Image 1: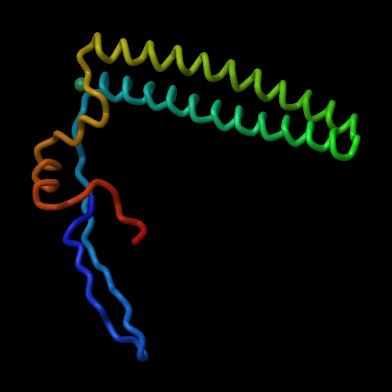
Image 2: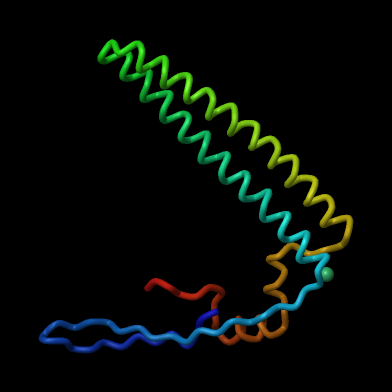
Length: 144
Ligand SMILES: [Zn+2]
């Protein structure tokens, strides 16, 4: 978390620059091993969904690229290769998507059944609430 953000203008060789400073801190939110295991599984399913989305996007780009090249340059072999590669990529990504989606739904149902809060619930931790109330923000403010 970061807070105490302060901006001040400083003159550096005739130009005015804004200098921003802030403080950071990290809060450890305790959780039991059951909750940790459920949160880890939830994250894995989310990662699978992300990878499958990237795979589908890449597969579509290769497919369109191959078809355009076949139409504009009459490059039939290239188009066949591009379509073949994209179909393999798209089917693998679709399989990963459905597996990850099933997994995410199952993990969600498990989390609810066990009465375990989502990981975002960590923001309700009193020490974090106190910092948020004091104007602090979640994150490390690595930019800006
Ligand atoms: Zn727990």
